[in-house]
Amino acid sequence: MKLLSNLLNSRLFALILKEIRQILRNKQLIFLLLFPPTMQLLLFGLALSPDVKNLTLSVVDYNQTRESWELVSALKENDIFNFKGYQTDAETLSQQVRQGNLAIGVIIPPDFQRKINQDKTAEIQVFIDGIDANTAGIAQGYITQIIQQYNIKLANFKDKQLIQTEVIFLYNQGLTSSWFFVPGVIGLVLTLTGILISALTVIKEKDVGTLEQLLMTPAAAWEILIAKIIPIFVLLLGDLLLASTIGKVVFHLPFRGNFAVFVFLSSLYIFVCIGIGILLATLVKTQQQISLISFFFNVPIIQLSGAIAPTESMPPFFKALSFLDPLRHYIEISRSLILKDIGIEGLWRPTLALVGFAVLLLSLSISRFRRQLG
Image 1 (cartoon, rainbow, N blue to C red):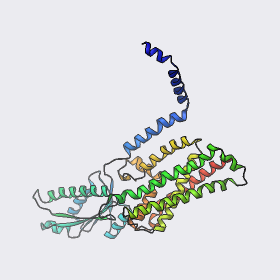
Image 2 (cartoon, helix red, strand yellow; image 1 turned 45 degrees about the horizontal axis):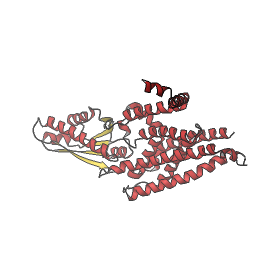
Image 3 (cartoon, helix red, strand yellow; image 1 turned 30 degrees about the horizontal axis):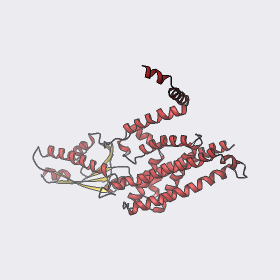
Image 4 (cartoon, rainbow, N blue to C red; image 1 turned 30 degrees about the vertical axis):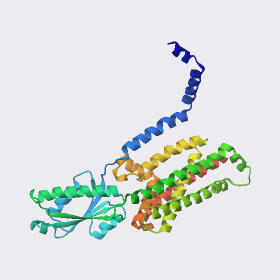
């Protein structure tokens, strides 16, 4: 008891109490300590799921008999596949998979019923988007298991395979995992580097007081900001070219699309990152604060982007929320150009989203920056 009494009356305890009171008075620090971890825990727990479900599936049924409809019903009656209706022909189905509107396409041949009735093996074709090797492998397993169960039903529990599947993996025949992750990592590198560097460049001027010196020069506010943006943009463009070279040489990414289009659309995303960084810099006062708040923003951006786990596996709320994530749209663009050879005409939706984000974020950041200069 005496030791405890001495501790409570000591200078050390008084200093500890002083620091605690000081921390409790700092509402911004309390917010950063409580709100970001709570949000990140919810996002990690709900948005990032190892389960594979809600994979979009469509069917071309050239047979259109009771047997083919029962097979389609067997594929629909689960929460793994999200049935998107029938397609008219195999070419349309393949185009839908190519554009990313479908993850799986099934083609039932015209002689499906006749072969089953003759106790012969009927072969169906299954096209699976193989960009995400893990998801594609699991989807193949689910389809094989469903068809095996239907086989047992057709053969009246005899050891006979009446239906055989020919599975074709599109765009990643070898199911190479790095082909899924590396385009996403390129987006992560641009995001983390772009936001942090652009934010620190602006906030450092505040810390050392050189922003006031710039105001005394004849340069206009927009000239000061453009002079900051251009060097950052060039550096990040160099990062993009370096990452692309590593992806090609080390991970053997095919880069099937137009590389000039890839660089152009990546430049749009670089402007988005710069806009976020400058906007964050106008909201805080110190480099320590920008490091904390950029971490809070970067983690949800990464988690909702589909860079780590497919967005199809997310709950509906987080899946809808992910459309507000610019990184999601950039990763869709990069994977489509690197692996699928889709032209810019097939990427107008994510491209339009990036243009919108770039204009909005740069306008907000420039407006706030000019107000601070004023």
